[in-house]
Amino acid sequence: MSERTGRHTVHRTCTPNRAYSFSLLPTPGRSHLFPNWIKPSDDEPPPLLVYKWCQGINNLTDIWDTSAGQSVVLLESVFDRVYEKIDLTLLNRLLRLIVDYNLAEYMTAKNNGPRMRQCAALCGIARLGIVAWGALDGEVCDTCRLDVLLTTLLCHGGLLHGAQ
Amino acid sequence: MTITYKDMSHINGYGLIRGLQFASFIFQFYGLVLDLLLLGLNRAADLAGPPHLPNQFLTFTDQATEQASPIRLYCRYVDRFHMLFRFTHEEARDLLQRFLTEHPDPNNENIVGYNNKKCWPVDSRMRLMKRDVNLGRAVFWELKNRLPPALTTLQWEDSFVSVYSKDNPNLLFAMCGPYVE
Image 1 (spheres, each protein chain N blue to C red):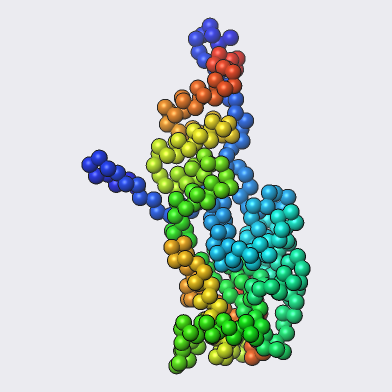
Image 2: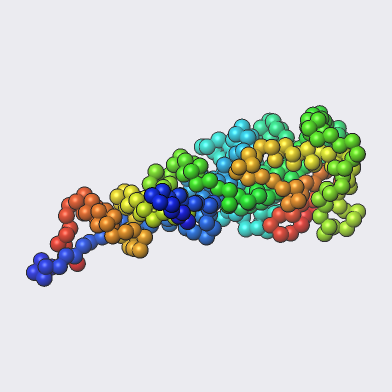
């Protein structure tokens, strides 16, 4: 065993579910976080989207009838400068509504920059056991990494001298 | 970016960095919030359908729900959205009255500068009748007011409002590239 050589072998005890591998776009059979009007979606590549839109218009009740002065207006526009205007505090609060607090912190901190905040957020996620160690390489400072490592190992029953 | 002065420091965070992990998810989620602002919570719930039986794209649970509000269809592709309204004569008149109270147009200047795509031949383009032009501008104004400027806004120059009515027999739009009539 490794005790003779005095070296420690550490087993990875977390399952390798990378925190950011979940599907980012609405897909059928998924948890329906996003409603049907948000595109691009896996259901419709763009040409099919145009076709479905036209079909949708045609299927509306009495859409082409203007006998009584009805009118149809189609407005097409762009949200102006959304990327730049996203406020990170607001984003943090919104994300907390749907994902775990630690994930929300991580997502917001990633865009904000201060290393400590990112580091703390990642450690929080790691403690939940949902991020593989490999994913944290280079992103977490050594102090935090040691801290999380110890916490994880204590929880999982001490594998400090395990066989490889 | 960190700015440090003596023992204080300030972190300057500016918006969302495109291309980072999560960016597309975050953007779609944020876009959902903007959609809810535009549609209003009730109409958004109508369009999406009940949670246990969500609607297919561009469908409603029944005809009564479909006709409950002028907003009939909505689609958002990343940051570009299309919204279809159907107004009865009375609804259009009310909207026009509200718009013209806020933005009176005694010299008929609304027709000048009305966006009209040039790709179609002149006789297929939207005819700029006064009522239709005002209705298009009114709808744009109504939607623009629903979005707080701190989050985002709509620019008239980037928008295209097409009106179909008894004076205008064509409905025109462009979606994801191709132009449609």
